[in-house]
Length: 202
Image 1 (cartoon, rainbow, N blue to C red):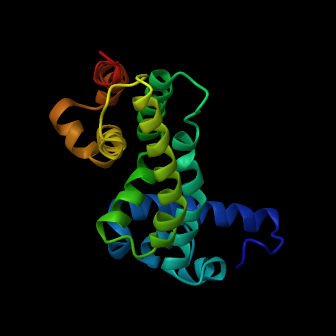
Image 2 (image 1 turned 135 degrees about the vertical axis):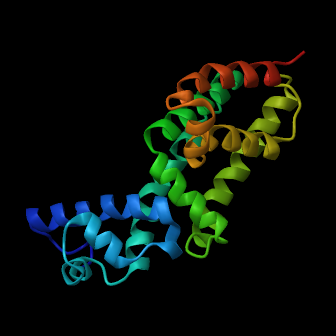
Image 3 (image 1 turned 60 degrees about the vertical axis):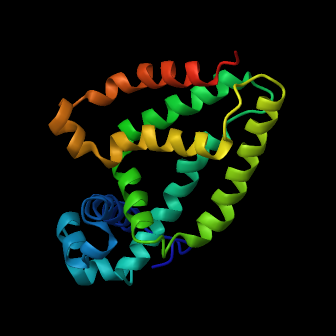
């Protein structure tokens, strides 16, 4: 069923239930490990009923990716050229930690897709993300050339922020074993101090 068709309240509710259930299944099993049967069971409906809304597992997965991609990129887009450079970067780090805390399933959904070679995300990566990534790298480079941030490789800076923030969502099970649940609560202060020291000009 196309999202563009007008749906009844029950149809909207069922579609929302399917996507929420699929997010759990995909984030736990990855695309390859997930099945329509698993998603239908998690949603509490029959497989034929699920197929009425989505023709395939891939259709559900792509819908989830498209729905969350804009939200996932929003913190990077929010880095404001007119703002204070250091505070803009630290705000970005804080927002990424908050997303790992509040949206771990979405983070793992993307991580699983990337690990598989991004077969369903290449268009997003080569267009939306690539354009945004290059734009923010140029901005960071300008701030560094102006002496407003310490000189660093801008691409590796962004990669390091992704690595240090998204790790708390993507490797949550490992962190819970090593440090216990709730460890992410200390991440904001730690990473704020880390990047503040790293980026403050001499």
